[in-house]
Every structure is written in C-alpha cells, then in structure tokens.
Image 1 (cartoon, rainbow, N blue to C red):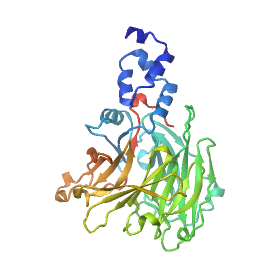
Image 2 (image 1 turned 180 degrees about the horizontal axis):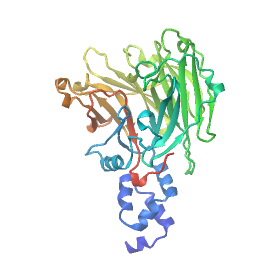
Image 3 (image 1 turned 135 degrees about the vertical axis):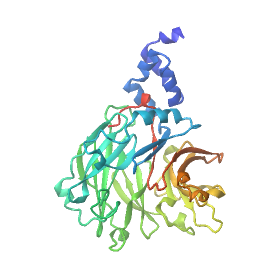
Image 4 (image 1 turned 120 degrees about the vertical axis):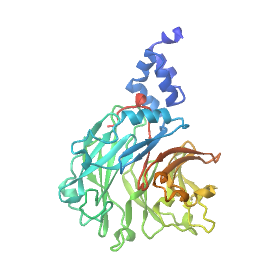
Length: 408
C-alpha cells in the first residue's frame, strides 16, 4: 500500500476513476488523505459523474411537504441516502424569506425549481432554481413585458380556488443542458408554459444567456378547444431531452424537444387501441440504452382486475414502435398500482397505495415505492411515505454528499 500512496495525484486519479460505483469510491476516499484529496477535486468528480450517468436513485422527494424520504435498507444506496437527508436542506429555508411562500414546481439533476406568487397574479411568479445540498440559488429575471403580453386569460393549472397561495395559471419545469465534456459551467433551462383560450404559450430561460425568449408551439385543433383545456401541463413525461403531454380527448402527444427547443404533435393511437386510457399516468416514458426511448403503457381497467404493462421502444418519432415485453404485475397490486415514477438499470420504481385491509387504520395508510426488476421479477421495497394523500413525487437521483458538486 505504501507504493500506491507514493503515486502522483494524476496516476491516482486514473486508478480511482475506474472504481465501479459511487459507494465504493466514497469508501475508498475515506481510507487515506491522498485519496480524499484526489476524489474531492471538481475536475475528478465531473469525470466520474460523466462515467456514472445516470446517478443512482437515493430516495423520493414529496413537494407538498416538502420532504425527502431516503431509500431504505437493504437498498445499496441507503447509506448515501441517509447522508443526503442529513446534509441537505429540503425545507429550502435558505431562499429569500418568507420561506413558506415558495412552492416546489420541479426537480431535475440535483436542482429544484420553486416559485412564489406575485401580488394579484397566479400566472407570473418569482422563480428560483436552487441546490438544497449546497444551499445555493439563482433568482430568474421576470418575463419581459413584450413576451408577457401574449398571455391572455390563462387556464388554472394547479391549486385550489383562483388566487389562493398555491394557485398557478402556468407550468414551469427544468430541462437539462448537459455537456458531453467536463465543464465548470453549469447549464440548464427553465420552460414556462400556459394554456390560454385558443392557444398555447411557451417561453424558455437559458442559463447561458440569462434571458427569456419565446417558443413556437404547434397549431392543432385540440390545443385551441374552448370548453376543454387542451393539455394538462403538469402531467408530463420525459426521456432523452424530450417532454411529452397527452392532448385531451385525443390519442396524441404534444412533444417538446428541449435540445432543439421545438414542438411537434405525435400520433400514438396504434399502441393505445383496445385499452381504456382514463389517466395520463397510464403511459410513461423511460430512457433506454443507445438513445432509445421506452414507452410503458399500463393497462389497468381489465375484467380480471390485473395490471399489465406493455413495453414499446423507439429511436425517433418516425419509427414504428416495437413491442418488447409484456408483464403482468402481482395480483395484489391490481387495485394498488398508481404509476411508475422512474427507472434505473433495468428496474422500475413503482408507486403503490396502501392495502385495502388498512383503509380504516390511519397509521397504516402509507404510500409505498418499490423497485421492480423487469428481468428477474424481483420486488424490493424502496421507501415509504406516511401520508394518506400523495399527489406528486419525484425520484431523487444523485451521488453521496462527499461526491457531489454544486448544481447551481
């Protein structure tokens, strides 16, 4: 071991970069001061992050709390998840006061997007992108008046009565602007959208330019319906830089390619024929290898009360979707299944409601998240949320605090 410690930092870095997992690297960095010095270098960590993308899931974030629920043993990420829960401030108390005025709107790549209402408006809000681990944030500039003038009578997207503290007539979310090479610049984009009568309006803020600009949504009859909101913006899917929304009363997707910042309409009726689709979360997009996108269609409303998952893949929108797999979930999950919140290395992260036999026991009315190995059919509890109603949750992926870099 003495000869290993005598190596230069550059050679040690080339050895340690080949450590197979973040947990192994964290243990190695704790062994010797020289290892810790090399591993804590921002340049080394950026290289390591690129080699281990996507990072492992550490827990589930519940924005209505807000609260973070770490992965539970025997999950291998449980120690890192516990360390994250202690180190990070998921109450966002470091944001400008009053802290309770901020509402969590999205999470991606270690960043959280929050906003708070401005006087007299549920549409235009103050927006912040922040990193709860390093307690850093960036306040975005307001949308310029010439762009805001195109927003007329937007429909309410979330919250209670119009004008309430959590009412929003916009949908804002994060998009990655990742580099293929290690870089000191932390790139991201914020998309702002609103459904107005007769049109969809969208803007984008890029961290490179620090400016807002308008996007051009497509013109489609379903997006301009007067009596029915064309798109439920909050119910979106994402894979490989593209965002997907079901268009109301159609079997079509509204698609935003955030790499090109271009919208399109995609007909997905061939894979939905013969299946009752009542909820947007019955169809989920996941990232697959080699740039392919996997689409999981959940067939819930069956006579046998079982839940069946159909797996389709495509590389580009012009492809004919190919059925790759069909899985019937355990019988007792038929009435508990509430959707898929993510995937990692061949495992789906599935949300289940509490069992029916516990309906009268408030203590047992928990929502449980399992990881489900598609190949082996193995099921392991990932984490549990002790709440009767869980409307939204994000699968939080990242590295242990000792191997993390600021994301803002």
